Image 1: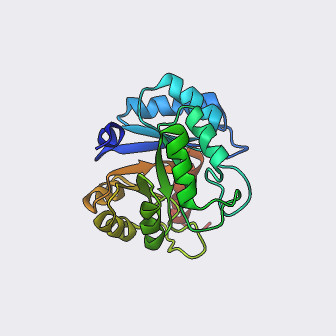
Image 2: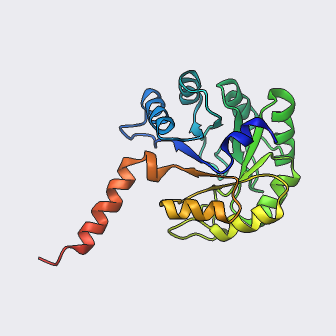
Amino acid sequence: MNALLAAVRGRVIVSCQAYPGEPMRDADTMCRVAQAAAAGGAAGIRAQGPEDLRRIRAALDLPLIGLWKDGADDVFITPTVEHAFEVAAAGADIVALDGTGRPRPDGRTLAQTVRAVHEHTGRLVMADVSTYDEGVAAAEAGADLVGTTLAGYTPYSRGGPGPDLDLVGRLARDLPVPVIAEGRIHTTEQAAEAIRRGAHAVVVGTAITHPTSITRWFARAIGDACPPG
């Protein structure tokens, strides 16, 4: 098994991202968040944008999954080959990209994109998918890892408040490549269950690195518990 994949097997990868306009949307801040996650035992980091990736790469020697969210089309996670090349050049060990069957802005197929990344950068490719069929197709297209990142985030996939652990289990059972559980994993119990279902590793983002969302969860729960008046 590739050394990078072996390093994260059975462990947690922390996604360090902030949305545009938020107080934490700053490359130095995201680098510090990544360092804090590493201190807590993260086996790897997932981050987005060339500047964030460069900062994190310079600060940490952990497996780094990189992506670049760009554009307003359906496919916006590392949407083109050029984006993928920039992600690799910024220091990512693994290039994460949209692994769905939706049209890509540069007109390339997923298989063509994966092949270009392999040939021109030598990096591994993680395909972010939303359904079982997409996961199978991504593996057939040459992806080195398949993540359930987009489950519930496409109009045709099953959503819900928590992760799609059934999808994790089915893909882990049937695919010849490692499956990474990602998407709405908010508790330690959900993360552990993903591993029990066969996930190679678990990516946790919001529940660790997004204080706005975490605060909102607590505020809503306390508000619901308060008696009227």
